[in-house]
Length: 599
Image 1 (cartoon, rainbow, N blue to C red):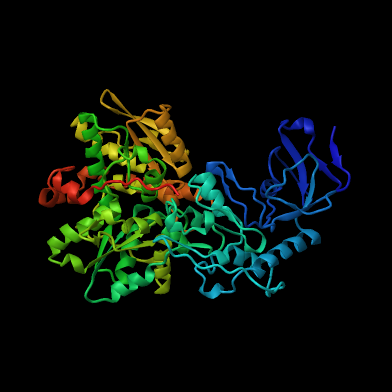
Image 2: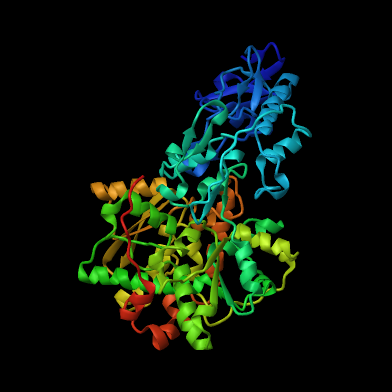
């Protein structure tokens, strides 16, 4: 009993030979069977047929499949339909016959793309996303060489209000990916469609500046924007000026997640570990000292673990929330101000290392702290805003002076023509460059709390932790939990990545649904490996998994895997800080939080 499509002459699978929740159709004469609720775009992907998209956003790990259908460059022809349909939102039906390559479909896509280009600036050569722009790539793929529809364009001012993100509404094509990310994934609800017709644009309500809103500066909107309507504040020119200033002593630090992603900008596979190449490249750029933020992460672990133990022993507020992620800190200050007594007071690894560079390092090297410029290379755009927070400065002198993203770092290396994949490897400077495996896994979701548990266990139990790989805390599920036994005492741990998941976890904690002794939250999908300043991964969770696996592999290959075993960490407490979680440590390494108005 076979069923036959009369118009196409293509035999389709017998409907009795497949699950009841599936649908069979043909796309460009290729038979394909998919789940009943699939879109034509998903069916085409399964059939190996490419359909161009702009507004479509799919994040499988977060169950996000945007169907705004605003750009209409994915239109296809369906037999029997009077009009073209958008493949990203049109659901499949049994026996559907689709053509993605018909003259009518191609003409429709081309016309819609030409209309988008007619209302877009022609400044590709100097655009921040030149050669990274999806609109530019589509124009090339469709061989569009001139602007067909000429006339007036929308005009908005460029907005520079935040220290992290630049908003250029003239380059907004109303794909609304940023809106999906901000509202559905991160649940911050800062961005929405404004205006009508020709003046439509995406931005904060009432066209407010980002710096005036509860934007967390996580940068996930930047990560998904197909054009340069949203980009990071470029600080590379400030770095060059500092490097060329003979009166300045310029030191640099590199976050753990950078080493498993920067290679992607030079053709290396995702997850390629580039630690030694990075150290060599930074010396080629001219930095006076090259440090590893992993050292700061080891210092953070000792302080956070000591704080956790203190709370357990003294009945302090529980659960303790790790506080290394600045976007997460921004989020809890504005969204959950009633819970500000819970986060750890420990500063982030970046800020801790900056503070030590301008105190301990300056003292050890006999350098005037005022002449030291601390540059940080981070996977995160919120780090740019974090560095400027007044409570993280000392005597009005920022602990970290300049923050650049992984992408900005890559562009600097490209600017001087470094052959990054073939660089000889070297080590970080030893004073604040030695690190343990615990600090390396800071770059992925679950890594911070795993590192803290390795140390907290030995502080509290006064015995070695034999199994250091706490696999029950690992994974990429949005919300997950695990238990670490401290002797006979279970320490229940909750983990969330992505601010939408963080919201659900905190609401469950507030309602009594969840009970934990410790919680780790990272704002970005996957944690720092998926940060807003990383090389664009275009929603490909396989890329994040490759980066994550590389960090765990690097941890396993590191001789020391517990932060408190780092000899340079022990030395700084012996010679400078005194007791972990003590008076001087509080002065330099801890902070407080401020409830912020929810706008």
